[in-house]
Length: 198
Image 1: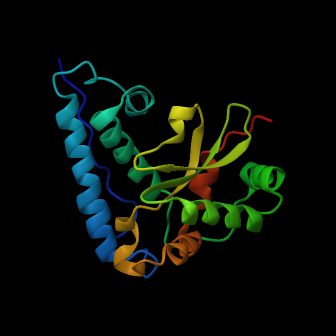
Image 2: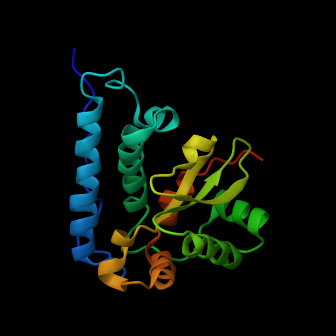
Image 3: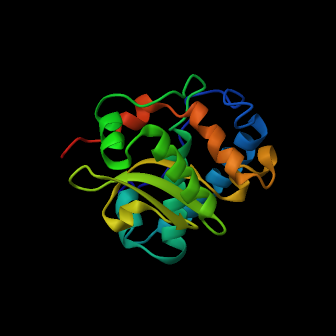
């Protein structure tokens, strides 16, 4: 019986395409080394276990310890890097734009609150925009490998606030690093993750 082996997808843009917001050097280390290690570790951890043929999202929702950490970090990084486009930026449209206005007042206020949550997270982790089963939007933050899937939410957008995500390009200027990411967010991709329910 063939077992499940997770593979690292190819990025939809060149390694230098997001520069100067995310440099080719950061892509090389963050995607090329950190993410590869999470996926390699995940495959080692599930080999010859009951997790071998489990969907990655289900591992994240139910596992703990090293298995959760590596599964969630593998998923988080793919979700993060596939949210960007060198021609990104601007504002969302359609249902997501309406939901942001409904739940945060304005797009600018949403961005302020999102950056504030990312800057305010002590240590390493992630800041997320997610929706609940009714389509209501939430900004959450979490340490280390945290993922809103464990809270019954559906992630829509995330910014990585581990130091390795920005230190080569911004040193300790986390706030600046997070603020610059808006210029490369692919709102077509992010908007497609939102399902209008309310």
